[in-house]
Amino acid sequence: MTSVVTLSCPSCLVTNRVARERLEAAPKCGRCGQALFQGLPMALDQAGFDRVLANTEIPLVVDFWAQWCGPCKMMAPVFERAAAELEPGCRLVKVDTEAAPALAQRYQIRSIPTLMLFSGGREIARQSGAMDFSTLIRWVRTHL
Image (tube, rainbow, N blue to C red; front, side, top):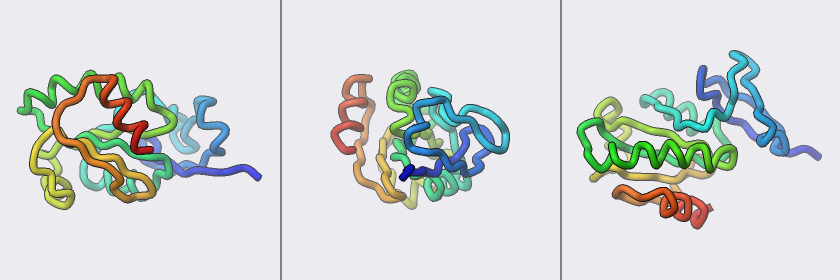
């Protein structure tokens, strides 16, 4: 029997159903035709975050950041590179805490950058502070 997972399209946020064994085969969105995995983090506002969290069955790695934050700027290329490495096993997401303060409050983000790992819609790990590439990859894989 084929296992099916749901995930949100990074382009149009529509929920797609994909056979788990086809995740590595560059699946495309059934609505907009864009690649479901683009090797880049998804930048989301609050509504987009809530939708992706509710409709994505693969783990989410979320970077809570702000434009004025020096360590966040240093970590941005690391997080982008990690998206290319970890997809399709995980979906990487960026949330600007200045643009989505209610999300920062909901998850009690006290310092940035803060990374959170969600599985099944629930937080399973959290880490504050910038990380280098190998530390980030190891942190994600350790908690999955």
